[in-house]
Length: 522
Image (cartoon, rainbow, N blue to C red):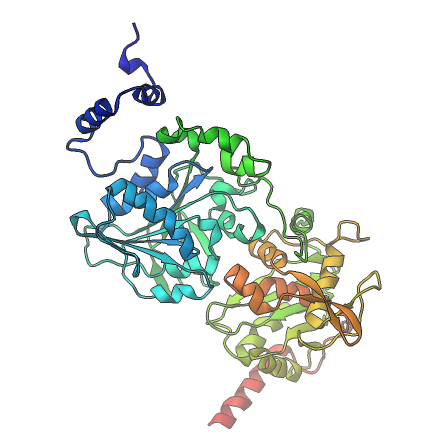
């Protein structure tokens, strides 16, 4: 005779379905007496709840209990929580699930999105539809920040929102919990970069699910993995690293969905959605939008062709995109024919004026290569300094008109920005005579796959127009500095390399120019 403890939880649930309503009510009362209002399911959900990581990503496939983890953590472990969805209409699912857990909507103010929970806990439901909506929550104290469907958020939104973590209670831990399925387009690829140790199969040092890794933001404003939780020195100050982890889940981990037929629903999805939602495959079917300017696979192929070189050959061009301060970075792309060296960056706090911009880029140029520089804003000041050093400088104004046409001779370019990016696209075409080799840089991949294109009618005929820098910033949540610096080396009217002047070194000229500026200021 089969005993109850011989049955799996799923089989027990199927048997419960045959009980009468009265028997179910009696069983519910017996099972729930004295238990917390919510309990995690044994397995990945419990592991995610109990993880010591500062930032947890829980998810993968659909149906793994991701939303319940967010709500359950707010109900049982935190005092003041906030859970975000990208759009406010998407918060309805959170509202309905919390109502089902509590058995009531008592304590919820739908106008403010604030839910007064048992034991004096507070939960806010927030949305950040527009790129700058994160500022609505700037400075607001929360000890738990949750993100439902993290791949729907822009990277800048996520990074800025988690920057405001604080609590007045030292006994309550502060953490971030993210939940989500694999990204379905290139715009969500930043999530794979952020948790690359777990999600990127090309990562040199892969991590196991649930394993903690520690990171700091280095002087360049980039994530840097460090050995452990001990403070490390960054820019002259000691910084305490933050830990991350990823814990995968799938529908088989969710006891309650095992008996509903939900898995069969996921199995019936067409590919690649089936692999993404059923298996949580982060590499499956990430398709490009129809009007994406440069196909993702072209960029990945160019990065796969790249190998470091000791002998790089003559530098043929240097693209320089100065930062506008803030979180933007100055980027310099060094082109040697069809091979690009690693893109060099510096944070906006360092490159904040013309002299500092010139001091950043000048040591990088060689062989008299032309410097293509974005000459708007701080770039105009940097341009003046570089011209004064008698370097081979070419000003690039993206909005300026272009007289060229595409390689097929059918379409004009709306402006210089379209010209340089389209010529870069043509060079990345795998059928090109000498296809490019780009450094394996995940930020560069994101920058080059973000622009969209369309055909517009001008007074001279049909022309190619691509996304503006502000449009791309809305997609990425940051400025496409690396991509722009690479693209600028494809501006058609770049001058040829020239020999360096022999009378003074660039260091001497830069120093004398700074001294003259200081004397005039005095």
